[in-house]
Structure formats: C-alpha cells, structure tokens
Image 1 (tube, rainbow, N blue to C red):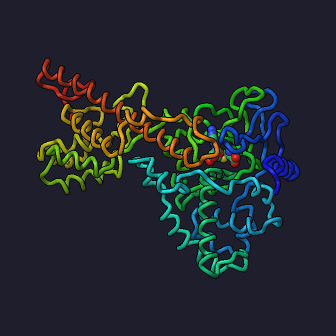
Image 2: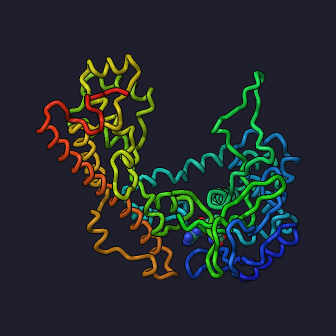
Image 3: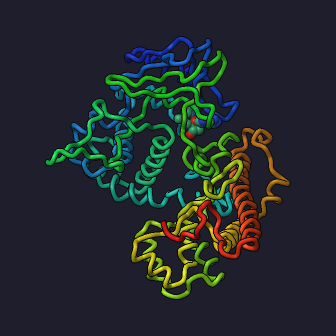
Length: 467
Ligand SMILES: C[S@@+](CC[C@H](N)C(=O)[O-])C[C@H]1O[C@@H](n2cnc3c(N)ncnc32)[C@H](O)[C@@H]1O
C-alpha cells in the first residue's frame, strides 16, 4: 500500500499530465497532525489574484465527463444531481485503473467523521441540538433503495457491480452513503460554460433558483480546507477550465483556505465532520414549533379559533418546523431572532377581532415591534428550549476539554469533545437571547410606566400592528 505522501504525489503527477496547470508556489501537504487530512499550503509568497491552479473542465469527475450516460442514457432523467453523481462515482470507482479518475479516487477519503457515521452514544453528546433531526440517514437509505438499487439491478452488467445477495446490497448501500458524504464535503455546484438560462415560448428567461446545478468533483480544488474567515482563495468558473486564485497575499508556510460558507458548528459537523472556534460566530439554536406552541398554550395565548389562525399564518409563511436564533456580538434581538417567531407570537396575542381585520387585509404584525407580553413569551420559549438539553451551560463549561487536549488517536473522545463544544455554543446563544429579552422587557416596562399608551418596542410613535 502506498503511503499518504506517495498517493499525493501520484495524484499531483496525474493532474499535471492531464493538462492541469499548478503553481510551483503551492504544495499538497499532509496535515493529519492537525486532524485536517491533506491541505494545500503556500511554499513561496503568493500575491493577491495570483493563479494557484487551473483545472481543465474535462478533468471534473461529473456526469457530463463520464461515459456512463452514453451507455444508459435514459436513467439520468429521473435522478437529481446528487444521485446522478453517486451513480457515476460508483461506476468510475468500479472501473479501477481503467477510470480516468483512478489516481483521484486514491486520495479521496474512505472514512468520515461526519454525523452520519457517529455512534448513538456520540450523537447523544449533542443532547437537544436540532442538527440531530437533519442527519437524514434513514431518508438517504430509502432513496438509495428506491432509486439507485433498481438501476443497478437492471444495468448491473454495464456498471459491473455485484448486487445479487443481501451482503452485496449492504456493502453497496454503505458505499453509497460514503459517496454521498464525499459529495457533501468535496463536490462543487458546477456553473455551466455558457451560463445560459432556459427561455420559454414567450421569450421569458427562467430564473428558477431551485433549478439545481449539476454537481462535480473538482480535483485539487477540493483539497483546500476551510476555517471561517481565514478564507484566502476562491474558485472561478471559466469557459474551458476552473481556476483557483488567491484573494489576498499569502505568505510562504500559510495554509490556503477555501470558503465553505458561514456554517454553524452543528452543520459543519454534519457536513464536514470537524469544527474550529472560528465558526462559533455562526452558531445558531432552533426553537421548534412544538416547543413554541406548548409555551404559548401555557401562557394562555389565543385559545379561540387557533386552527384557522394557524392556517392563515401558514399561508403567510409564518409557520415553520423550527425558528432560528443566531449568534450575535453584541446580541441584537431584531438581527438574531427569526422574525417569523416574533410575528407568530404577536399575531396570536391579537384579539380575535384584531386578528380577523389583519387577515382580511392579508397583513401580518411588524416583526420589528415586540410587545412586553410578546417578549415575555419568547423569553419563556428560550427557557423551555434550555431545559431540553440534559445539562446546563455552567455544567458544560465547568468541565469542557479543548480539542487539543483530546488524544488524537481517540476518535470517540474527539467526537465527544466536538459535540460538547457544539452544545455549549447553542446554549450560549440561548443565554444571550434570554439576557437581551430580559433587558427589552425591563426597558418596555420603564417606558410603559412613563407613557401608558405604548408597550411595544420600536421607533414608531403610534402603535402599529400591521405592516
Ligand atoms: C473539501 S475536503 C478538504 C480536503 C481534506 N482535508 C482531505 O484531506 O481530503 C473537506 C474535509 O477536509 C477536512 N477539513 C477542512 N477544513 C478543515 C479544518 N479547518 N480543520 C480540520 N479539518 C478540516 C474535513 O474533514 C472536511 O470534511
């Protein structure tokens, strides 16, 4: 078996021999000591806008570049970009040395640290984090069985994949999960060459944002790690190639970072299987609709005609499975608490007559104006949410390891520690929300004593319920 460095070298040689242009100022490096797999580092100073590498579009591992669609053209019409790429990767992987991407497969991970692969005890360390509802292992299993296994059963000879007995199927399902995780952490949405949008019969251009772009694995571009705002490089889509360029000067010895987006640490764990402190600024906590509903019921909010009110609010996009509260420094209620949650509470605090008049005019309460009662109820929701976690923030903080204190060989301890940091982050957001709401309630109370007419926060002079 080749070691990590030899595999990296073969991969880089394959890229160069296949038409990629790679700056001599960068190097694919073993960063396993930092628990970061491989990464790309600068070995000489790099200037802003400098080209780091250029990958010809023909080297992207994608449906477009594989010969599989020419062999089974009809199946792809029914598959979304994820499933299409999983099928192509299964096929190309099975081809082994005959696949153009053989050297690329050699450096792609075989195992993941993402939540999909955590044990029950490890997931339990996330306590009440809403991320647990988003792992989607059963749904993925179902989709693979419903959509991909029938294709493999029908075209097993083309794909050269064993699928006859139960053991084969289990191995195949595991492989599909691994490929799905590879795509989640490594693939890019590939912008088309012409960037053209469909034009309908009347000449209108389709602007459908949901129109999913095809996914593709871009060798080397996906070897860049990320660390929130330490991003210093970006991928640009050109006609024949994709180019990675420096966004700022990079000194020799520095790592070259891509941008995975402003992800809360819970989602970073789910999608990428790692966290760093730099992502704490994006932490969020979610209050489920069910928790919100229980608190409102206990507070005696809007017991009459609740169903039709909820129907109306649903039609206006106010009813959601969960309401996000995001981190903020300093914490700002308007910036950090989902406006839909404020609207939900304020709408259900209206009298029946006020609600009917608002609904007739198809309006909603102004999320920028929170009443004292509304603020109290949302604060109760925050308290209820805190109680959904098995331990308190103080208990967690009292005994919290930093990631570098954990034995690097001990995967379970590492996962426990990451989970604890995620739940601490979520509890800190709740604490900040609680304190900000308490300050608002106090401010509104003082204001109300001074002026009996108004109990709503916000700049408007007159109480304005609808927008
Ligand atoms: C797009 S790949 C980057 C290349 C990857 N390091 C490798 O060796 O294949 C994304 C994966 O890299 C790892 N990663 C990225 N940024 C990281 C960071 N700042 N710290 C630790 N691991 C990181 C995570 O395992 C993530 O799922």
